[in-house]
Length: 514
Image 1 (tube, rainbow, N blue to C red):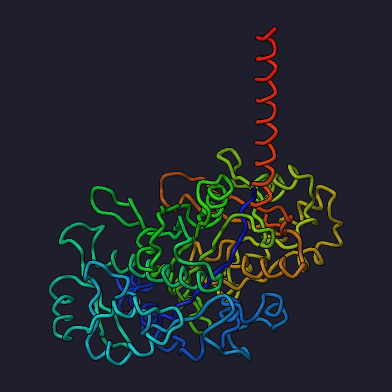
Image 2: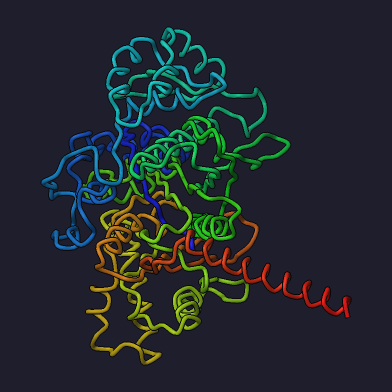
């Protein structure tokens, strides 16, 4: 029985001070060009909370607007405020930085996150009012410490400062004096990823109405690694986040594949459910501080706000087939193998057309393709173009070569079968999965029948291989085949087997009697 998508959760965290202090582009610039014009100009290009609320792609990400509505907004989008400015959406929420610092403290179990007492007092009521903060989580908030203690840890013990409007309000302390894997820098990255994953988990649980105790397995597919000097990337983000989220019946593990990680993780989750190993699996990922302001130089040079000021997070919950929700079809998986190579045609053949051909389908039989869903408002000024559109063009071009699409129909194919990019450039976050919430809704409404999620990854970034990576799978409207029906069929088969066994035994007894 195929697994189904029970629900989704999508979260964004506005981190203006983290852009300046923790984004890799900025931290590198402070080393190589500390007096440069970019760092001087950067603070004037940081968006306010009100500006991120009215930003079209953000409202799409949390479900208040759709990618189809975004497609009709004249480009660029950063200077055209959305008419919806709500922090909460159908699929999730946007969280301001002050609340997120408290969530980091709540998610910390080794007393590594210190927040100044006045800061906690000023922001805890807003934190408690958040939809996702239960009484159990609220009870984990600590009163805070004196600012002198925080500054001591920063000045004398290599703690990473936490800023609010340029002022120190806390710090993340190192977990070991000499182990670089437990340095304050690494612990900050990991606690940020964990905390945003917790928020995504809670959001998905809330949207599905699933009891926390029903989730049996969690897979984390972010791009961070946690461990110590003896096991640098040992994990386990999944179980760590599940603990804070209150998933007492869950175990879990981490899956890594750079930007392709989420697609790999969803295939694994669907396999676990379909095999019967687990009834309910959550795939989750938190955000990445290193990628904040990644293309900031290009944005500042063009007089734009720095648009990479949002941490991203998501959670997809899969369960046994209920006869209603969209199914993940594991009969044909797109695979970028070792021998595929990196030529665009070979990549699209392996990820898009091979699985279609196995099922006897054409590209036009897929209602929507969801590849790398990067927001072009971010990538175009940096010279990377419109990444989703480039993928649709390659799919269409190969379709023309195969005779499935008329050349003159390419623009229409791209428009009808593509999805406008809207996700933050957080690496793994935009890789196919941001569209699943919308695709699920469209299938439940009967508007589409099939969609393909395509994840891609750059394995060469780890300097262990020059290989590219990718995988894909098809989501389809529910076939109506339920787990209960499968049990009924099994019961019938069991009854037939029992009858045949008893019949054989009676025949043997009769033969013995003769």
